[in-house]
Image (tube, rainbow, N blue to C red; front, side, top):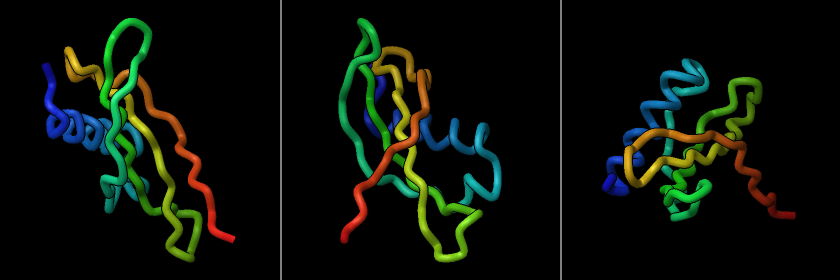
Length: 85
């Protein structure tokens, strides 16, 4: 069984490998949750990263599904964040 701490480390490692700089610079942990991907349980890890196309310092959010059994990152999805009016 993969701990939540290990799942966060795996999500960060995956983001660094797939997104590469400048997207993967200054990653921040935003949320953790539990979920399911098919029949297996997953940790849902949301990371934020600086948007290199935006000079205002806005951040993009992505949620990574990490298998609780193996620690494999199964998916990476865009996480929409509601903006305050």
